[in-house]
Length: 371
Figure (cartoon, rainbow, N blue to C red):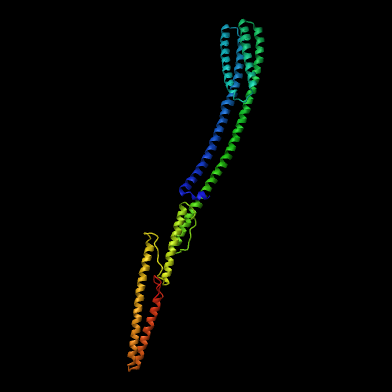
C-alpha cells in the first residue's frame, strides 16, 4: 500500500485504467473462448453428424434404387431398355461410391466405430461385385434363373449395408443430440462464467474507484476544508499525509508550512498586542510580502514607540522642573485659595505625566530596552 501511495496521481490513474482494461479483456477473452467452442460444436453437428446422416440415408437410397433398376432389368425383354437400365445402374453405383468416399474422409474424426464402417464398405463392395459379375451378366445372357439367384445373394449384402447404414444414422443422431446437450451446457456455463467474470470485473472497478477516492479525493477534500478553516482564521491545524511522496504529500507539506508561517505571524502579532516590540519576523523568501510587511510594521512601531518614550521622558522632566518652580512661586502667593487650586492642577499634571511614563515604559523595544 505504501508503494501505491508513493506513486504520482498520473500513475495512480494509469493503474486504475489498466485494472479496468484487464477486467474488460478478461470478459472479452472468456466470451471469445465460449463463442469459439460453441462454433466448433455447431460445426461438428452441422458438418459431420448432419452430413453423415444425410450420406448414410443417401447411400441406402442409392443401393435401393440400384436393386430396383436390377429388378426392372431382369423383367425387361427389350435389349435397348436393358442397356439404358445398365447405364443408370452404373450412374447410381458411381453416386454411392462418391458417398462412400465422403464418409471415408469423415470417419477419421467421426466417433463412429471404424471397424463397423469397414464392414459397411465391405458389404457394399460385395453387393457391387455380385451385381457386376453375376446378376448383370446373367441378365444379358438371358439366364433369368441364375440372375434371380444372384439377385438374392446381392439382396443379403444390401440388407447388411442397410442395417449398418441405419445403425450409423442412429449413432450420428445420438452424437448430434449429445453435442447439442453439450452446447446447451456450455451456454449455461458461459452465462454463469460471464456473470462471475462480470461481477469480478465490477468488484475490481469498484475497488479501484474506492482506492482512488481514498488516496486522492479524500485528501484533496481535507486540504480544501483545511484551507477554508485557515481562511476563517483557525491556524492551529495540521494536514495529514506529509509522509507521502506524491502530489498529495507535497500539498499536505505546503499547507502545513503555510499554517506554521501564519502561526508564527500570529505569535508575533500577539506579542505586539501585549506591548512587546522586540520580536522580529524573518521572511522565508524575497517574495514573502506578508512577513516583509509585518517586519517593516514592527520596526516602524518600535521607532514610534522609542520616540514616544523619549518624548514622555522629556515631558516628565519638564513637569518636575515646572513643579519645583511652581512650589517656589506658591510660597510667595498671598491668595491662598488660588494657590491651592493652582497646586491641585499641577498635582494632576504630575499624575498624568507619571501614568504616561508608566504606559510607555511597559513597551519592550528591540534590544531589551523597556524605558
